[in-house]
Length: 305
Image (tube, rainbow, N blue to C red; front, side, top):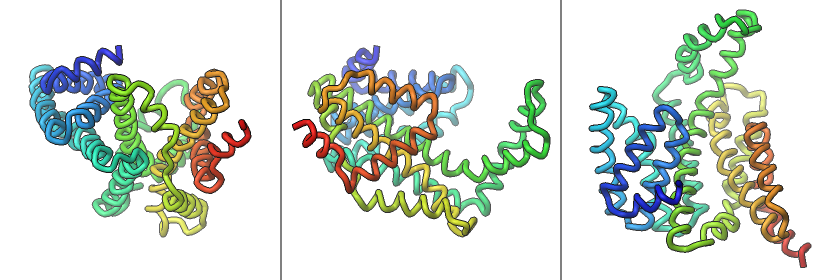
């Protein structure tokens, strides 16, 4: 099915636009479909070039506007997808096309998340308070459910804690959407035109020591007692954790392949990611950071020899 999506998308601009529009419409019900839509934009841009990528996004905007206008009477949704999904993945795909560096492209995607954090802190006097107000109706509805066991005080305390973390989580989710779209598009490109090429690229990329130091600095800030004085750094931490978790996954894939281990080990890692997402993201990110100094992939080669 996924191969069919890529094949159809490569038949022409309007075919690509139709596929992206349908996938984006499906994402209104199942959000992960937005990753596939972003993947088609990345594939089109990487394979056909910047001009065709831009024209495809323009065509997608037209097709999707017509679809949501006819079906939902809400054409504003098209503008939301354009700003939050299609333009960001287009920009990151252009960066990959020009730099030929997967690491630089992923760091640029994390940079978009950091820009989002800074923007929210500039536009909102208190982002945590804004999130608290936005989430209050949902938490009130949740606390009224029969199975809810927390007291009103405990519920309010949980709401305050969540609100203080939401800017970082939101920015990390935004960056992850772009990163996964780029990964899917690059994988499709390799599947169609360079079989095996993406696996090598993914297993070899390295984010570098400077971004790793930034992650460590954000982590120290999050653990420090300074509180609001470092709130922006705390909000940047989830964004950096996401990109270095991908670095950690790259290392796991590389070691499993080079050591010729059974695919069970990769399956186990992904199952753990689903079962314990936050803990696994942190663990993989730590592996990704340590890789910048210890080069586990090289050590794996040496031990194999």
